[in-house]
Image (cartoon, rainbow, N blue to C red; front, top):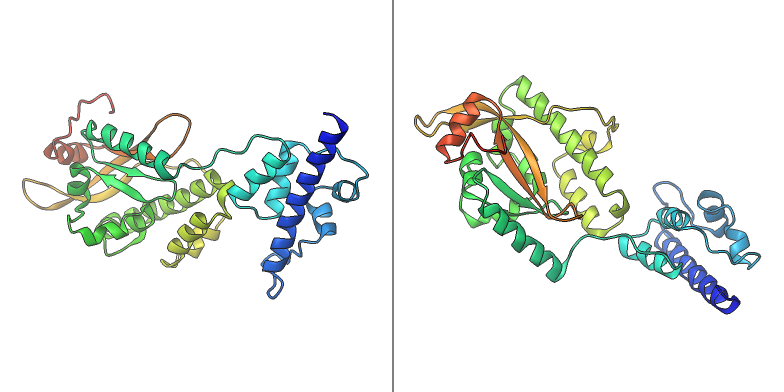
Length: 292
């Protein structure tokens, strides 16, 4: 890198960092930061990059490595777009962000086509945990009405927590099933937080966790993440088609994604015990399928 290019890159990086730092300072000018951050140059130097002062005064023009830039972005609580702008200014590749616009529409079209070929209860989920499609076996298994007013509730958060939907009361019908449901809630929330750690300052992420908080589940949000090995089977009361009665069945989920991106993904529900296989067979699901 020649001297002029080095100077230009240095100016771009410092301008980007300082603009973000001052933006955060202004945001918390009239209210304390939850972690008492002040977003000063000295604090950035102490907390994120020990050579920041040297970089700031031009004592060195050596651009920090990619991981350090990411660490600075994390200290500055950058959104995905802000972090990627900073990485690009420093000459590094941006971090792949979630699909949106036409790219997301195409991916959802692929997911819909794939789901049509799956004979088991299935749903399509985006990174925001919105459920963008379900098949008929899914509707019948979980007794989701065709009433379009339910579509506004179609998010995995509501799917799990909303007591107006049949899923929660049928998954917590006794002490054992409630404990299992609770463990899945904790595991699901912490898995999601790990998967989307770099997006936690994005608007969609904040909006999703506001949605979770309306169900008063702070102990699940703020509890320790032990990353314990959990039983991925779940129990629910399902309707026996012949008799119309509700019986407990056990099922598990598998996820299908296309390419390197995690979302959108198709969640497929598979029977685990004999009672579940009987219910699934009544839904037209082949219980001798390779999925099983």
